[in-house]
Image (cartoon, rainbow, N blue to C red; front, side):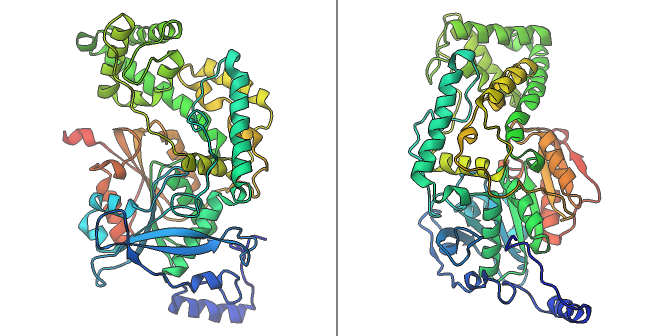
Length: 492
């Protein structure tokens, strides 16, 4: 039985009295006799954080069980931070937050998000950040992976598939050799349980939450495990919990094709400026001719020469119409002998982030095939259907060789918690279709879609037409009466 999901039983009369008392008395810890009660009794020692550069930015450490099935056993540390609400008069509670990933540090998120929140929100909440288990300063793990092994996107080619399989196997072997005693416990469900321990240690009956990208899935899992302890949950750029996780990888491809088609139409309407073609079909042909040329003769850029697969790997840029088009023009010129094109910006994935990423993706779900040939077939099939990126999400990954399958079933999110989902129409990573899947899973939620919104992130990207709904919800608890679509372009 799951220690965190069990319910006590009593006679109807005793149960009615208990319910009445519970309504009058804030329940901040755990039930009597719960083995997690000892964790709730920790005293936090808040000290000024080294990062952030602000006196009011404080950090502390909290201990949690490594294995929630054995709460009396080995423990790990969580690094926690806060920026306190301005005063007690308007304070509503705590707002925990997660910046995505998995594998991304969240300790500095309170000072990063605070400027994006209006004063009336900051007055009501202590902003609480934390590095999830295994990440950053929270008992970190690593796998000693090479830069190539830390890269998720590897295009499928028949000639290189054997090397792709060997790479995926190497990642799994290295991770289990380095941190095999911890990896099975680095899951979203356990991070959600950690959040509930934080709730108890902070002395709160319920928590509010802001989650971005993967953080939306973490928040949704919390609402499923602890629906009575979820207060005001904002999910920015949501993932479909039903797709965790191989379905999410493959879900990028159809959205990439939609964004690419939109871009070809936009560029064709501006042929006088860019010279890529007067029709969408001509622009499409220009792009694929460029990819074919790069496969024969890699195109020079400031970040090194790119072959066709490397150019395709930048598919997410097509949502940024005005930014990606000059880059394609520059690649086309460089391929014809002109100056090197600008490098496509790429973030560096640390070994710690990669280790936790694969631990979570592989440990959350049993949806990963164990047969490499299944990945080959899927990559060929998806590439044929979605030429731009189909193989990138379907090809073999380390989860095919993970040493143990997920210890728990994937979380089925299906509840009535009143969350608010905010979503850009053209998000290339947490796609609109994925956010709509989250909306279907959270029946009590509302969703605000930013029409024409580009890029990954709404609140985290700055001012948006969705901000009013977010502020109203966080300050009053009131959701929009219905799902909404707003349009930033209408004010420009």
